[in-house]
Amino acid sequence: MNTTDPPCTPENQRMTPAEFRVAREFLGLSGPWLAAHLGVSDRTQRHWEAGRYPIPDGVRLEIERLQADTAQHVTAHIKHMMDTPAPVMLTYATDEQYHAAHPDSPYPASWHRAVAARVSQEMPGLSIAYPRAEEGDQS
Image 1: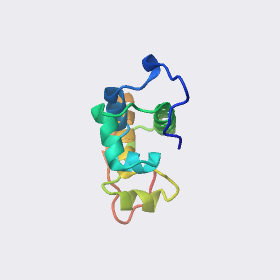
Image 2: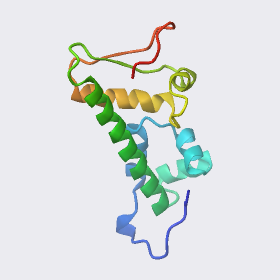
Image 3: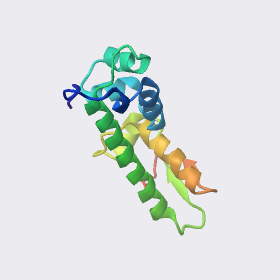
């Protein structure tokens, strides 16, 4: 991940600290998870959010990629449940549970819960639940 700016990045194109934090929280990602994903220290990530360091353009581009990927997941869940009379979306309380059900996902369980919240905004009446121990994953 490139965390440096190309030469002459205009200031008006930089991601602001507030935009960075709002995006991270809306994605359901913790600061430490995002720092590890970006290949930087927790401290650097905190400094970006606090406005102590400018946010590199490569970081902005990766946040935009994460946002697009998340939006695709939201859309896929909605399409999958569109004609279901009593839709239920399973989500997970812990990363261990989430990765047991979705071993190929690079994201934490908090991201999946944020996806579930966004799906519920688009699907009134959606029930969100944790899977029972004997259930397989259906979402």
